[in-house]
Length: 256
Length: 161
Image (cartoon, rainbow over all chains, first blue to last red; front, side, top):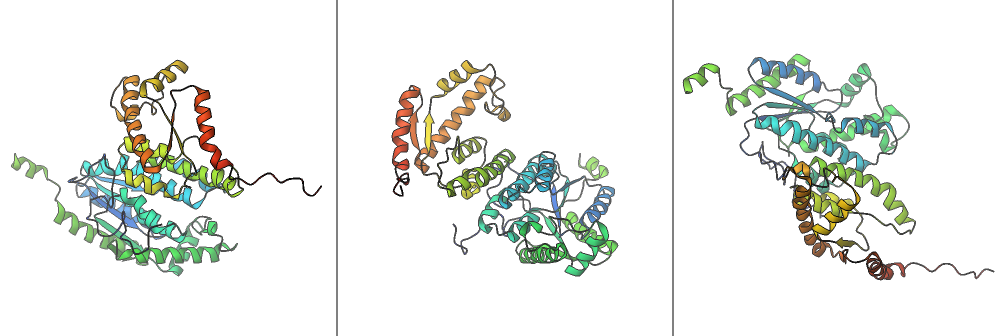
């Protein structure tokens, strides 16, 4: 086992945006790809998906090509992950690897091609979700970060942060607490409310511990949808304008 | 990369359910292929060698690992004698090195064998010449395995009677 103070190889905050965190995917060089990767992180019920929808429309109106990708959404792995979650045979290590496989599939098939083609990729959750969930489940930190060394460091990571009481209110208002969101697999007890509280508290601590290292742009998730969206747009616009303006047809004609 | 992780997930599941429990119970586990297969296959597909070794660091180190080595032509002949068509991934057709399955197999498995040769030294695998007869191979295998098996506790003698 690697000593705890050894430098972390793989996913760590020192990596430049748009580059692989670690050894990457050797057969897919990504240097110089024009696309931008923007990740929205946050626990369940913070409104990530709503924000991404609004951001997408706004970006498209501004003339950007947008591709969305989301946790466990790979066509290859989604059915398997759902099946595994519905049974009781899922070990935490297998769980972590299923998520990583899903992510790899989306990285190779969706994210990298979109970056190559100059799209803005909006990622509903990113590897930080995996790092947080696995961290809570006691998976070895060095192993985990080496594992995700094939991930690309996003250009921007927004973290929608909420406090526990707001989170509980929102989850109960919408669809209620479910087994996995409540960390019932960790066997903190039979009470789903207590388990949810304990588990989500640990998750919030994991996110907090990553915030500085991975340069999260933390947004107050308790504010209204519109206020959050406004802030997202302000920061995304500033970044995209400084990075590369979409070429207007008129400018393209002049350039010729 | 996805291919590699998909196999690792399957491996983890089998390790936790089929390998570790019998080991804990003191039984002998015979694994038809192990992590070395993944090291060889994934590296040939362009996955980073160090990364894949780290990935599988959760695996149990085998007490003994045997590598049955055959030249490419022998393995091709054996496969062709048994069935008409080579499997898509077995022939590395996904890599697009050749549209001819036999040619692709030769190229892909050739690289896989090179990786195995690297692994043999790295992990101290026992090499068995698999071109020989089954009887010869089995005799060698038994000789290699016996030191490990003899370490097992003796069957309880009928002292109580």
